[in-house]
Length: 244
Image (cartoon, rainbow, N blue to C red):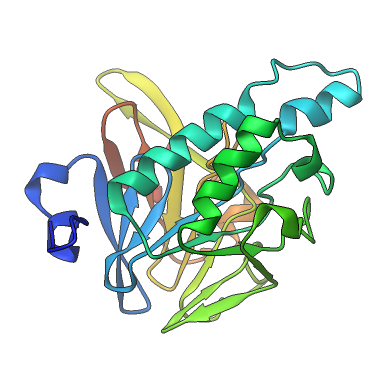
């Protein structure tokens, strides 16, 4: 740890975290994929998450598709844990942070207070998503369509065709499957090729789209490396090793 108690850039890459993180490089930036589904940029003390989909349970409940209304609390708990671990100065949420435009108003008082505590303690950027194009200012932070830091471009949906170098996005909720010890293992994953990276969904009530699906495959026409978020460790594999 450094002098103020935070995990330093070198500590983030130490052998003690091996298995719970995977090293990535996108457009020359050294990043860490965390087992939680968060992306960490140690040199910029920045943490990135995608597709929280807060209040999805209450949204579906309004349309007579009831789910237990605990998704926001569970997602915020996971977010609090990974923020406490890395203590970033900046957090970037890559869109669809709420399941719909009214999601922030349906947060319980307790969950709203937890979220405000997070956004008040550091620089916080909400990237506009297709589910929540204008996140409520009442939850703190600032809203942006896109954000450029150094050589990385943060947005919700990956650009069609050839990516701008350094593109970091969410939206697709990528997942992948491999054979391991005689059985099929399927998990959320990071998917990238060194030029662009798509993050897994961080939210508790989020499904996934296989990286073998044409929508994701088209983003990586030549090669794609995935980092599957297993129960206890990250499993990295080339797309050629994946199974349907």
